Length: 223
Image (tube, rainbow, N blue to C red; front, side):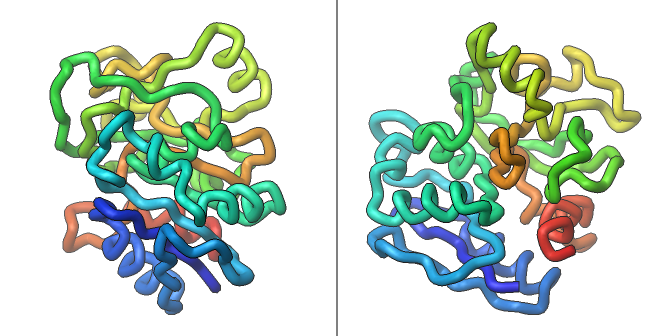
């Protein structure tokens, strides 16, 4: 599998993603600096977590104007699978590849803990497995929000990828860590080849990290 990981000033999960992909696929991803203007033929592009540009202005806003982003958008529109994780999810929303917004957590504080999520979509390569997964979150602006019209569009087009739940798969207010609308933890574009999610699957890709259930997302691309 030929994959690429985008690197911004402030990225702090790019190496974690690269290690996870290498361990799962056997191939080392190419690390693409944000000033690059081209990406070679790719089977997967990952926009990783971190604090791109220090999260100044608005999370993901500055990164969304980086030179490499035009190529990410072009590849996504051509059907290449793209995953945005945490800050990467924020960046993909800023580019309008994904709908909605990510605002301050309901607690108005940074959250770092393990959560459970479950797939809500079985028609994408990222959500082919149908089981509850434990993954960590680490964010301050992970509260997913959308207008009524946007939420209806997302639901009508089956674009909700994951929802926060408890260990038994029950979706409720208690299992929602950040106040996200409808417990949404991740969404897809309408073509289902672009995924954005706040939990970190690369930090749950091997048992030594506490969970290996995050690797399902990457294995879907590999299959």
